[in-house]
Length: 140
Image (cartoon, rainbow, N blue to C red):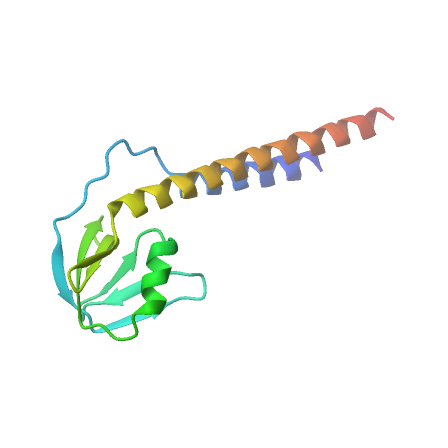
């Protein structure tokens, strides 16, 4: 049972570490660029995407400002975006107004990373408690 528990623990920690990623000291953004919107979609998991006809640009880290914009605007033809990476939107302008910017993106990244770190601590705590429980059970 300990081997199985250790395997599950290590697997969970690796998965959480992959999602957590390496700490990025500086985030680089593209310049503002206008795109003509050919469509938009939202997955059940909360991934927001805008199609520019060539591919999909995903909102990098869904946050309150992004969701508010998504549901407020029914039809839009043109937006300006700043990308982080190749197809991840970090900031968006609609009709010249910054709907959400890099400040909100960076705050959402910090919240996401701290949530993952909390999950890593919780998984480690549960693992230690279970190992202790099994060690005590074996002594009896």
